Length: 172
Image (cartoon, helix red, strand yellow):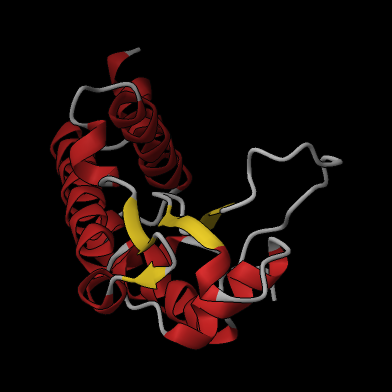
């Protein structure tokens, strides 16, 4: 019976190192994505999509190694989902996701925040227009959220308005 289980699941050492490689690659890529900024996490451009697809292909062998069995793939997928769940509920979540960044305050852009987050004025203005604001002076605040979207609070936000659905500035 033990030999049959070993035959189906594979060598325990291989299984252990597969799980270890998957965990290491996951954590390192999470760090890379964090360093690349929130902009990468918003709606994707064709360049972002291509980078993501190629990135997944590049790290595949690093995660699974020589074990391209069904069990190895399922173990890797299971561990990725478990790590995602664990980290999304962890107190460390904030470290990986970061904090919202103020891009505009009282009608004035904050150049150092725009530069650090990789948001150019053209993209900021597109987000303002999507929120129904035509000029920077009409903005009380604009914030780059941790998911890569830009939230805008217009100066007239206290006036009663009809609610409308606003799409992300990353939708193209």
